[in-house]
Length: 238
Image 1 (cartoon, helix red, strand yellow):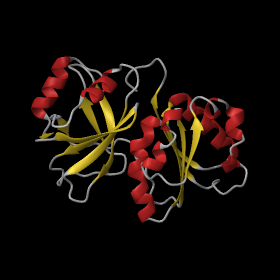
Image 2: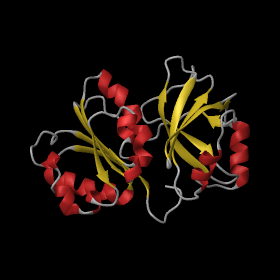
Image 3: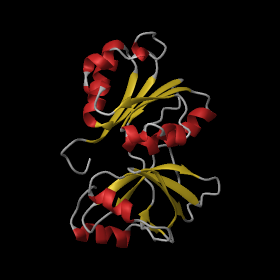
């Protein structure tokens, strides 16, 4: 629900249970466009599957979706990763947050089943908007001893971020280059040696990039694909 009349959000706040006493405990500027925000609260009784998210109300009439990047063993601290770009409602809201601010959260939700426990190999694709989901994948893949590969298209200032987040086995591509062109995707090494032809592909981020990559995967392989575009240039609320 990216947008709705004010009364709808007000009614939800009255009737949908909220997590009490959640506050911002730490803010890390990973780059000028990425912030990692730690939230302190009692999350012990909540279920956090891979890809769980919060719909956070960022104005009277708008909400934005933020994937939970990680949660500690004590279930009292979790982290979100916000992409600060332009002056969108979500970006402005996340940019204004300061340590000590209270934040209203409903219970986490999981609408998309991104993670497939049966997959032996996983290829994850995305951009800055996908980093939190990638972080939620990582410990589960490592625990289950999966083969995995991260492919990210990022702005130059964020090229070091996957390494900073511990996302091993990452390959970085410049934004709006390879995945904007089918013929360049065709030339990717993963389609040359066959090592990933039986992988499970998870495609997120830019809608156009996701669509292009999916087309090429279907040409070269019979791999299973989970795709979910997060944003499209000129369209709000995806």
